[in-house]
Length: 608
Image 1 (cartoon, rainbow, N blue to C red):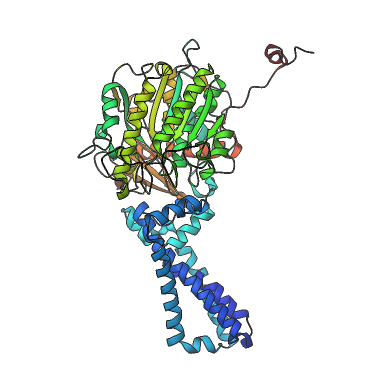
Image 2 (tube, rainbow, N blue to C red):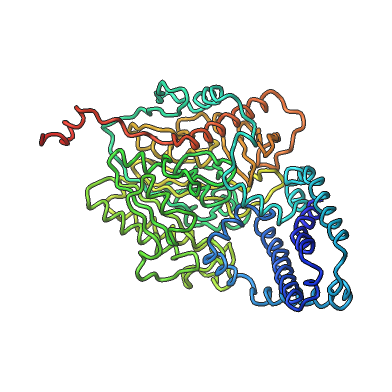
């Protein structure tokens, strides 16, 4: 049905053209040339998209989605990477040859179709028939209608790449209320505030707000914070997180066993880097559509940088690639980061891929920037995003025994582990390390796999914390959480008071059974807690799953119980409140009104 509908819609422009052109134009040489060129281009693109759909499905186990749309926005990195990974010359040549072969066959075996125009009434009948069939079948197509199986990949196969890609392009920022289940705004905020309440939180009187004051000790030192966001470094690679077979992270395993705090039950909120940034830095739920990092209203988003900057911290973000990618630089500099360092700021990198400089260059620059900020006498937050563990999986030779020319993901993970181990050895020798928290967390898992609508197993990620100021001895924290909880947990380790609108909670203050994870996959959003997963989908659909993703595949449940329904209400409230705060531009801490007395105290009016 999906493929037939797309074929109908794709044929309508040609049928409309045949309807309006006069008969005397049909056999004209210019018109024959126009048709030939048009068919060559159309079928060349169609054959290319057919192959691209297959390659995309192999990587993401999905039809074209927002990932594909984002890749088209940044063609330099993407197509350069594809040229390295695949024989693009042969692929393009093959598509061109197939297009030429189709044109030759149609002219050879259907010559009358090219030379003799049909009567106007026949052309009108064809166009009208195609249009009516398309209109009649439209209510029976859509990605939501292909979800007839409990196996997610089968549902994806039943879809259509063109349809999915166009839908993703048109719905990058979905209007939440028309498509997803909602409750009254008052009910949503009441439930959300109850879900986010903590003993140390004091709420404002505004019931349509999540602003609250988190109590702390103002005499505690302002510890430095380093957050290393690691590309695609899922839990599946870590021996300390139960990898079957040889660990790909021996250095990090050793550091954790000796002097680290390991959060062993953490999940990414999505499968894109911008989702990881949104979750770790903003503690904001992964709404359907795009991450807030790339949305239009992205200048009023609370971040951990905003919180620490209000407490006198210097803030710097270091990225080995281009800051224009995924709108990173504009977003981060508008929301708490004083400085943004990117590829053009690395004068002499030792090694780079199409995505940016290698991890070693990135981490050395991080250490250099930490030294500078420490010398300025201010506490600092430094955040870095790596690129080495990304296709085409190349890295400097001689660092690990494996050959980078083989371009294997496992080898890139081992290089990432090597570079992180080297970084930890270096940072430990710095004088500021005694007052520094180092957090290593993945932006998302390596690949999406699994049969659920939201394949939660592939979303498992590590959070590793180092630093003698907060880690007295090796420990493992098994409380369920997600990336939204990273910023509140780090701020809780610092222990100073702050104002917050975050959706996450301090995992070190929760009882093990109180944790939860909010997740996103394509247009589906979900909440997992107490081995119950509720998935909210387009057109106000709801799915229920039971089970622990660590021990097996959660099974779909057709008859939800009372706990399932309660989890559903929690999911509706949290995502609805996130949407409302974003739309109103109120997911941030407003600066306090400056009174006459505060101006005098700050020296602003002392010259008058």
